[in-house]
Length: 412
Ligand code: SF4
Ligand code: SF4
Image (cartoon, rainbow, N blue to C red; front, side, top):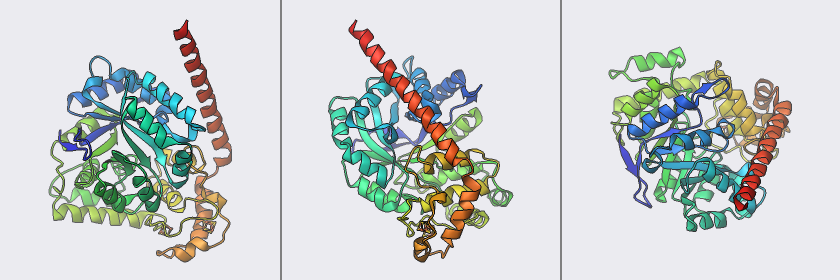
């Protein structure tokens, strides 16, 4: 296992982090025994950074990770988990959510604590509610060690957040298709230039850049003199950037875990050859040709007066068509743009004003495309969002009552 250093603290982290958002499943829930075996195997093989969040597996991911880290494993690793801004209505909420996370993870401190899924709007909301004072307090009380944020928004919002606090790290979506999407390469360099460690999520776009890939893509990989899986090519492309500290992989298959561990033993920064990089560029060009909308994610069309996240909607619309067998893309679209884990920003809100099309350097007929996105992606949005939100609200209430009950019990 190779390690890279967190610039502000000198902490040494494994370049492969275990993402606990896609743990193995069984009977509609997590296959706990298998997940715990996999997590411990990764730690025994050198992984020392594990990333979870209350939103993963409907709250069960933190619980299973807490169990996996018993029997001496907690002391070997750094835990990263996140504050869900959509559950925060006042500063008190931040306190009880963190207290619950510490209890669930069976630990007295979180090593890397992130504000989950920041964008311009969610950041402004959290800043107004006093999140920076909360982070300072949690740090001084020893409940968290390093503060950071994960990000899904525009480059300008990313820079604004980077500059707003003395963060130790941030987490961005980054892969060879997303060089110009969200924070992108410019954001990566900006954060690294300010001495932030950069953790990368979605290095394989939720597994979509790993096999089975479209045939045109597989043919390009097959011609490489060095035989690597599509997943290894994707991960090595991210690790090739010296500004990247940890690459998170949502692992749930023993073979893939071992394959990733092996790659993490030799993926030095700038180790890809010019021939490797040219091959990856050809793969990227082919993906872009296969996509429905040639959106580069530049963000020039933003902000939209109706609040639509135009590049975000196009990114998931494209993913839906590139990988038609992946049924989770519509779910991601609804949760991200329907207002479940972010702001309401779906294509169906389009007013057909045309402002965006005038600004688009790709000359995309955005208002027309918004109709296509709506037709393909939003069939269930008006029903699914209230149902999902209702479920989250109930879970939240139950958690609060349980926390109250256990506090009263401890006073008995
Ligand atoms: S045409 Fe639609 S997507 Fe474009 S700016 Fe107007 S409301 Fe937003
Ligand atoms: S301006 Fe055009 S290319 Fe850029 S993000 Fe908007 S739609 Fe995509």
